Length: 160
Image (tube, rainbow, N blue to C red; front, side, top):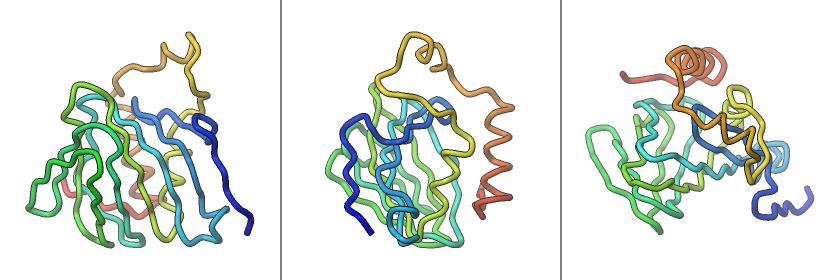
């Protein structure tokens, strides 16, 4: 394996349901051991309760204020906080701040992070004027399609 170096704003970035997901390390880079993704969640953006049967996931809060639901526990996470969700642990999160929240998400083993590339639209940062027009709230059809792909291809179980 070779050393991975990603300069700021230079990773593969995808716009997924209004949020940005930048790949810092992928299973291709790590021999399948893990994936590392920088997530930038817009204010009020939320991920519904779900779990992963095949992978652990951990989040490190870089910026913002994020509310997590871990099974029956609610946690308000702020910069510097670290959370680790084990396989099959229900978790949900929402940016409850008025500015974007930035999270480093580690997924092990790798694979589930490829969901973001599959359902997202590749973009370059910083956004140009045309790409800024893509920043609209997700529509119900896009959400439904993303949920279907998460369930059928990535083994995600939702706990709605």
